[in-house]
Image 1 (cartoon, rainbow, N blue to C red):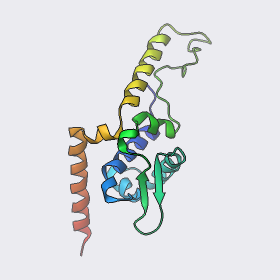
Image 2: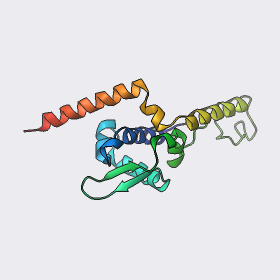
Image 3: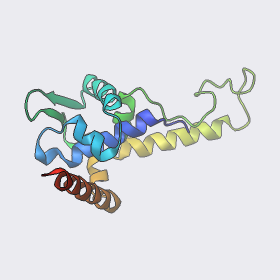
Image 4: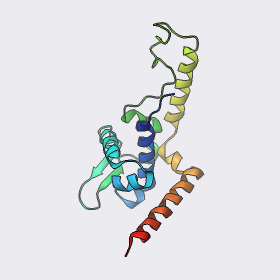
Length: 155
């Protein structure tokens, strides 16, 4: 399967945005700090997410990004699609030319796996991820670390 850093980071950043939506707009620098993703990379991802209509930007002091739809309306596959990623388990990207221009012996197996992965990601929303105990635990840890960092940097 070929899900690159771009797709993984986009889903992570969108989940972070959903988890902090109750605080209003979230800055990319906050997401960058919490998720340890470079700010410049996030800027590129969020330009694509905005063009796809998944986020809205808020300018000015206290600005940042907001989800453009409720978290239960945004599937993981929508996020991956927005950053032009594909989830394809075949070696030939589904072109059936994996063995010197012909279909390889296991091509259909990998195509079926790709379909199953797609269905799974279509059915998984940001809201569902937000309710997972592992996500709640990790988000809590990240919040504690961010607060500790703020306290450590105060005079």
